[in-house]
Length: 142
Image 1: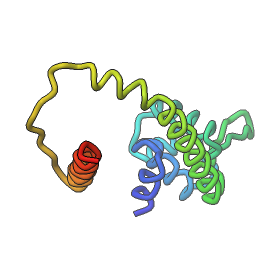
Image 2: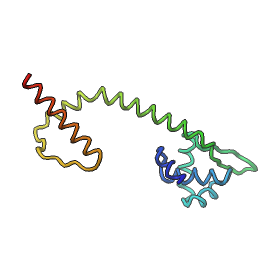
Image 3: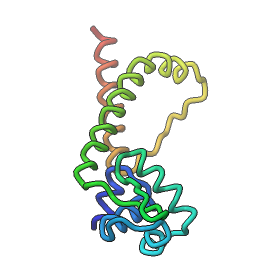
Image 4: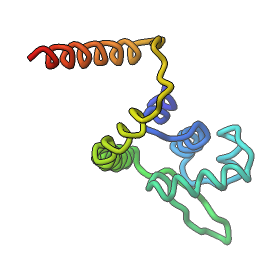
């Protein structure tokens, strides 16, 4: 259940397992976190580094040993907000590029006349295309 929400907000499978294990165990060595998460120690190091960059884990040194711990779960909101801002930025950039992409699309001579749509997104695309073609047809007569 916890892992599902971590995956939905964008963590990778192994990152989610490691963060969940670290939440449960408190400050621990990589070896113990890896064992609890069911991931190899070397892979755990890589993913802990990523989690640290995302502000979800931290490290401390005590008695010549390095311990890693999960940061408070509230930091997940910051991660979601960061990803939301990135998505908005990408959306803005995409809007600027649509005219160029449209030109590339329209210059291709071999467009299929029959297309297959699947699922909810396919249905939305089909309705969108249908409405656009109806509007275009109406504009030809006016």
